[in-house]
Length: 365
Ligand SMILES: *Cc1c(COP(=O)(O)O)cnc(C)c1O
Image (cartoon, rainbow, N blue to C red; front, side, top):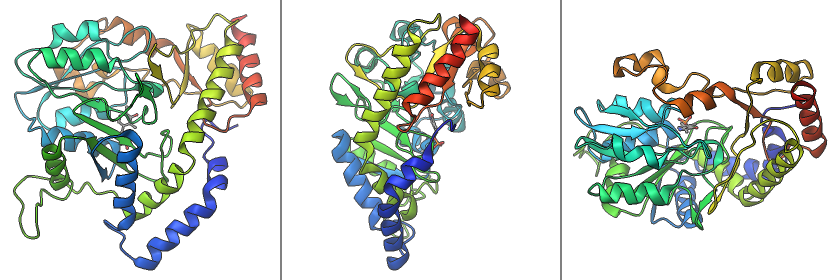
């Protein structure tokens, strides 16, 4: 059994991928070829924003957004400690200070109740993450940011692209959105890539310059930038994937629904999708104090599982100088200690879910 079944997907879209990659090989515009612009326009239409910029990774897209907002030394950016390291890494890379706030016990996303007290006069951005496939309470987060004087909100939608919050698409819920095309993400390609979204034309232009070495026109570099381009091959793959993306979201929701049904009889916590949210289930993650036992029983049955973010970011050695300690973020630490992600993709078979749940039941019953 695969943890994420990318093979079944490839078989489904192989013809389109072959055709699109051949087109790239034929025209030879490997960098900033027509596929990149086609994908940018398609993604703008898909989430309803005005501008999309294809970039080299989800990490670079967050970095470019921070750079475009002129964030640097002396500034603070608020994010969560329960996420992939990119979210905080990019803040530190600009020279700004990551400020962590705890997650909510329901969605495991940034808790708006703890956000207010973390905002200071140094706060230059708030970066909520849509962990495991659903967005944070962006309505309340935007309101708090607005009330605090219009602090920009950068939505890290690497895992939640394709999800919605009160009918609006993840990636288009705040000042800037960001996603990743890392293969295991809901909209994964076959390599590294990502995209930034905004409807702020001025910010879009700045981000476009920054992703091209700060270049605004040939031989003219008004800003410090990076090599942050998405390449034509990856854009071609993601274009093929977009043909089936909505169907894949439905399939993911079906898989998650079956997991939740079957697990409801067992003493494990299953993921809750908030009212007003839909989830793309980047992962299907349960909470259980018997994580180790379940993981080894699953492993004996050749069923892969992963304990993501088991050491949360505030306890990572790289961020030791920030001065956080164990106990600072109780919800994060509890979810980090009990979270276990089960095989998830649009192509998990019904019999496989049965087998996984039966194996878990032998431990928790
Ligand atoms: C994967 C991920 C990223 C980074 O994306 P890359 O394309 O791997 O750089 C950022 N944030 C979150 C929450 C992620 O899951």
